[in-house]
Image (cartoon, rainbow, N blue to C red; front, side, top):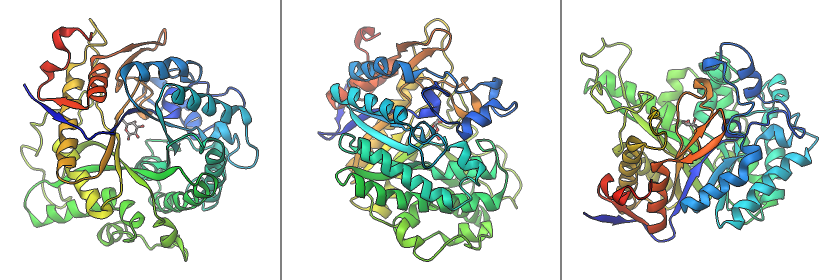
Length: 454
Ligand code: FCB
């Protein structure tokens, strides 16, 4: 029986996003978002689910903050709903929307929990989408206006503000593959979206710095551990292209390296939307980078026949079929550090969905094991020199998993969607016990001694 120690002062938290938990989709002056529009139209979300009520966090945030406090977590990552603050995207500011986030932040601070704010976790005001959405450059100015207003109001109390969550997923799922709002399938629009998200990030950084000079400002990127499916040269090349398009596309411009060449060539991108000064703006200094890591993937060249058996066929998988690959977390953190050096990093999302045990929805041994192994991988990175400052699990609560609706459950806390009752899972207690002690046990068996924490 042994333990490994996390550095003193490590940040421990859980993450959520506005549309996935808040509900109250048309309350207190909130405007329509692209996710309201998308989920209300048939055929977009499994089971016709919507975020209209979700976890009703808008009304139950005090209970949720109390859960975070009871677990012993010292940070909470949440996102602000842009259309709650700017119902029509720009211009008129809805005071009631800002008031909600102020109440939430004050409640967190009263419990000693550091608020980590994300400004854009995918709920674009529908009116901005109607005016062209992210492919339209004007959306970047609207975002900067919004960032400045939120930073002005909350910047004296929140510790971290991230501009955008997972720009890759916004451009790819929202505009290239059409599986997320606004449901576009337009490769050119996806490329201009990607660039405009980074321009918006740069403009928002300026607005945040002006309104709240002491806040740590950054961005959150999703990274995958991508590996060639074989040693074949074409697989190596395919993996490099995928690595460019997923892992380097946003990171490299942010650190001043510009867009990666092979990925750009493979997309046939002509860079028409890149204006003078954009690349310098995008490379404005940040104070931290958030890394979301879930899984790894083998990349096979489209020109080669499928491999039998497919590589990774025997991998352990989560309930959603995502391969469980803890070493990939160490790998992506080391990769990011190769670009960012001493810049503080946070794991801003990591977690897994598993089927609920009908006898006891709070028993989640698979998730406990998933977390423990990924925390081990995080420690490996730290011990190898990665300046990792915190780990925030996805997610505090079971919630609306985008196009998959309420089926997948990622929560440290089980939510009964009929009653909205919250019940802490073993994984929540586990993460809390590691957070409180700073010590990671070698085996799951040590986590919940004698089952007492259940
Ligand atoms: C990430 C999203 C988050 C959640 C997890 C499972 O890509 O940022 O909102 O859906 O995946």
